Length: 278
Image (cartoon, rainbow, N blue to C red; front, top):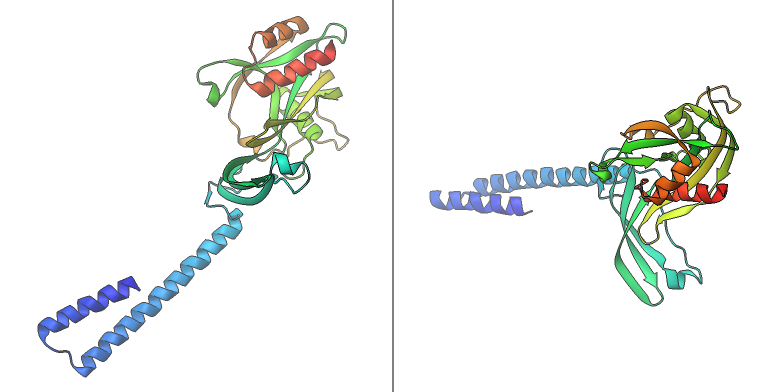
């Protein structure tokens, strides 16, 4: 509309310099303006439809990098407990990728509404402390990773096996077995789940599922199907540099006490496993 109005003023200014326009000239002017208006409207409608298709494809998120997030999206429903912890009454996606979804939640706590509660939906993860196949039950050693990560800058940390629970329906125990085989080429017969823990109670970031794996051996993965796990999708794109070393039970205890497992989910998993083995 603004473009057509500006064009009309321009034409009228040109014609005023040349003298009063004829009736035919005015008709031609109106015809040209009408055609431009129709074309502009069609382009605008086409733009709106394209935006709607993009929104439908990316899950109504304002910004999407690559593939859309396919994991679970958290909302707190109305219960007696939610009156004090918070009820989700609005959930607007701001930015997403296949890794995470950053949203603006509208949260009602008692009679107060908070409009700018930033929330991060992230895939659930597993972490596994794995017994060294070359050690015994009475005198166990464990396969510990030594690695760097982007958020650790130049620091090197001890770590345990970890990865994402893939969003196509994979369960945490299956993800744990898959990751252990993929990272260490090890299978284990004894699995101890160590709980389920929220990464951040106010901002989300998914859940951590730690495990202790014992009675392990090197060799082919066997879940009854005769095939090695190969379902990794999102987590397959993670980039890391690591080395594997065997550490005795006492060495692992000292290391976790001395903050050698720098990431909180690694130290949490190791500390829980040490308590379980006491």
